[in-house]
Structures are given as structure tokens and as C-alpha cells.
Amino acid sequence: MASGDLERGAKNRGNNSNFPSYYVETAEKQWTSWLIPMFVVASIAVFIVVMYVNDCPKKNFGSERSCVAKFLGRFSFQPLKENPLFGPSSATLEKMGALEWNKVVHGDQGWRLITCMWLHAGVIHVFANMLSLVFIGIRLEQQFGFVRVGLIYLLSGLGGSILSSLFIQQNISVGASGALFGLLGAMLSELLTNWTIYSNKIAALLTLVVIIAINLAVGILPHVDNFAHIGGFFTGFLLGFVLLLRPQFGWVESRQFLADARVKSKHKAYQYMFLMAAAVLLIAGFTLGMVMLFKGENGNDHCSWCHYLSCVPTSKWNCENR
Image 1 (cartoon, rainbow, N blue to C red):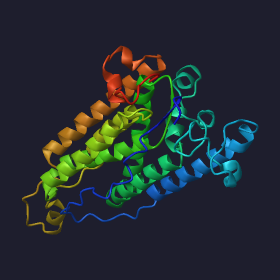
Image 2: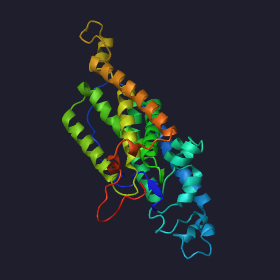
Image 3: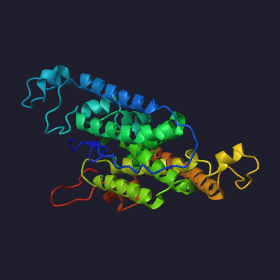
Image 4: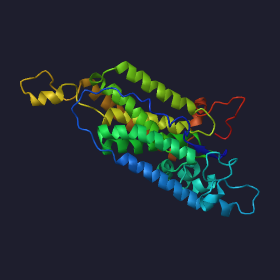
């Protein structure tokens, strides 16, 4: 995007077919996935509406700048110098609900913390994010149901928006990547808290960690909002300990054979410890983040090096106005 617009990680998130397909020894039922497909349809529909509102030919009439794909009429894209992702202008995204710190804090528009996750900077951005959502989200919804996965997705998106607003206050930000990283974080914590029921544990853990690390590393490129990624990831990671517990191995079977008393409880003690610690950290994190945000605090004032988490300047690009 142009320098005034941040998209939440449109790169390297379409290739998620390498997610670990480790075996789970459980008799739990499989759910039918419908919420994640609905999220995909909704995001695409919103993008179409945004392009309709953008109306590049009308707003650039008589200008030296030329819209891209003019045959699409009012759905044609902004000039590539302005938006290389084949999408609308920054002004249109801001009008439609993009995350903008000043409007959230001083304009009483806190709803932007939610609406920004349904907006995308361009065709490339929405395609990469929705493809990733299909690969990650459908599998999780089939295993844990729409309520838990839906909560993780939405709360992770909110967590990413809060952290983004605390550290990036000069640009707008859009995209579902904070919510997507929340699902990744939940996958990791789900593996850890349900460790005893998995086979090939180490391989699954290493694969997942590498995938997460690569995607986070992409966030240090300019015009990518890595704070939304980080905030979403840690929100989802903590929510996974709270919402994605599985019964310990043998508990389901023990209910069917009363003579077998080896398994006394549904969950192990460490699972409850993870749950309580994660719940406390979630409540504290959201409370602190919201208080700092609406007091107008700048996270960079409290962490002089944190800006490097979202952009690392090189000879090829700079990180101005971050």
C-alpha cells in the first residue's frame, strides 16, 4: 500500500498446506464447519462493497493517474503506485472503517478496532488471508466447533487491533491477519495443553513453530502491521489454553467401562494450571491495553526498541511514519 496505509501481512500466508496433520487419539465428534466459510464470504463481500464505494474512475477523472483494470468500471483498482495490491485508496478504507488511532481515541470510534479486520487492502491481500483462513480455520472448527473457534478469531482480531493502535499511530491498518495469527497461536497452545493425547509431538511442535516464525518474520517488512500479528497471536495463544482443552487420553473410554478406574478426572492438573494462568493474563492484558489506548498512550514511549518488531530499516527501505 501507499505510505499512509498498512496491510496486515498479505505475504506468505497462502501456503499453509504444510500444517502438521498429527494424529489425535480421541473419540470426540467432528463438527461441520460453516462459520469459517461464512467469514470468508463476508470478507469477500465487504471487499466488493469497498471497491464499489471507491469508484476509482469517478474520483480520478481528469487526473494523470490511471485506474487499473478499467474494464471493471467503478470496481477498477487504484493506480499501482498508490496501491500495488490491486485495491481501493487509503481514503476509502479509512471511510469504511480502517483502524486509525486518532479516530479511535479522540473521535469516539472504538468500533474501528473490530471493523478493520473485515477490510482488506487489495485483491492480493484478501486472497492470501482468506486462503489461509480456509486452511487453518476449517480444521479447527471441525475439531472444536464454531463457538470456540469464532470466539478465538474475533477476540484475537481485537487483541491485534489494540496492540497495533498502541504502537502504530500515524497510519491506518486493515486486514484479518491478527485474527489469523490468533488461530495459529491457539493451534500452538492446544498442542501444548493436550500434549499427552498426541503422537509425533516433537515433529508437530517444530513444524508449527517454524510456520509461525516465518510468518512473523514477514512482518518486519515495510507497510505490514506486525503488531496486529503479534497481538493476535498472543491473544489466540492464551485463549487456546482456556477454550481448547481436550479430555486426557482414556477418559472417554473409562466412562464406558466403569470397572476401569485408572483415569479419575477429565483433565490433568497442568491443564487447569494453564487455563487459570492464561485467563488471568488475558483479563490483565485486555484491561491494560484498553486503558492505555483510551488514555492516548503511545507504546513506543514505554518500549524504545519495540518498533523494530514491525519494521527493520535496511538500505532497500526505511520505516518512516511507523
